[in-house]
Length: 96
Image (cartoon, rainbow, N blue to C red; front, side):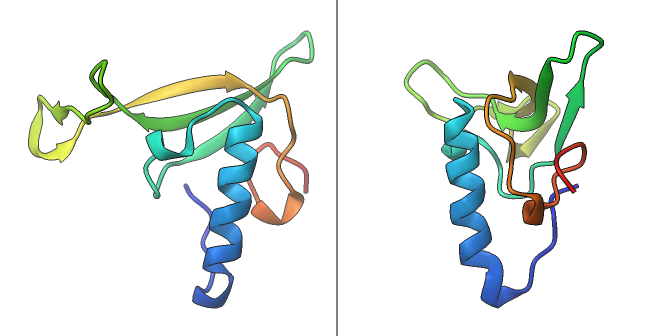
């Protein structure tokens, strides 16, 4: 589940989250604001970010969910965790 923040910290949190995603080669514009994030570590020590992203056409338009025509289509994706998130972002599996 996406971390919960109060309104006065929301903008600071959003900027930090976008910066962290970008540092890990994830386009923040492709990630829903309420996306769940999790970081796992494999047996060989590789850290991986798991998140929800919009499914888009080649030109970047969001596709409609074939099972729910009232929302954008989303899917689970993963990316190597090249840069750890700040601990205060409270990403499950991240620094505490």
